[in-house]
Structures are given as structure tokens and as C-alpha cells.
Image (tube, rainbow, N blue to C red):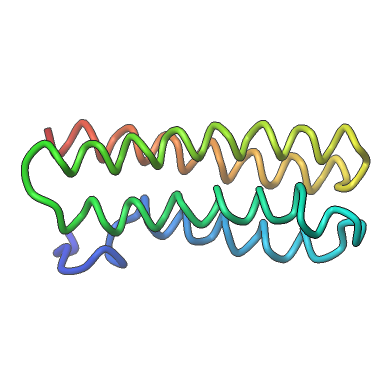
Length: 118
């Protein structure tokens, strides 16, 4: 088993990081009039997921779970925004499925991580 020394060693953080990198790559091609709307919103809440995992990793006590909870909430928000992007035809079905699969994987890993540190 790999020793966890930093947040970057966490599989959940790695998955969340991969998700936000995908969000950035996909939102580049959104309509320019979404620059301060959906693009900004997806990127902000997407970045929040690995950011809060990172911060929670260094916290002690009950504080740590508050940050993991923020990550879970941001993940759910992002899932809706991915759905909205698909229904607005900003992303293809393949892109939608790819993002949702990454989001689901991240959610499962986050749930497992929270259970393991309780």
C-alpha cells in the first residue's frame, strides 16, 4: 500500500484533479457569451472539489469533514452544470458521459475517503 504523505497522494484528489482538468479543456469551446456565466461557474465549483480535499487533508478534528462536505456539495453542483451544458448542446454525448463518469468516480472515492478517516 502506498504511503500517503501529501494530498497529491490521495486517489480522491487525483480523480478530482483529473475532473477539473477535463472541465477546463471542454469549457474552452463553450460560446463566448458564457464566459462569465456557465464557464466561470463550472470552473469555480470544479476547482473547489480538489481544493477542499487538499485543505481538509491538513485539518485536524471535525474541521476536516466540513471541507470534505464542501467538496461533495461542489461535486453535485458540477454534475448539474454538466447536465445543463449537455442539454444546451455545448458538449457532446460522449463528453457528457466522460465528465459524468469522472464525477461519479470522484464521488465514490470521496465517500470512501470520508468513511476511512472517520
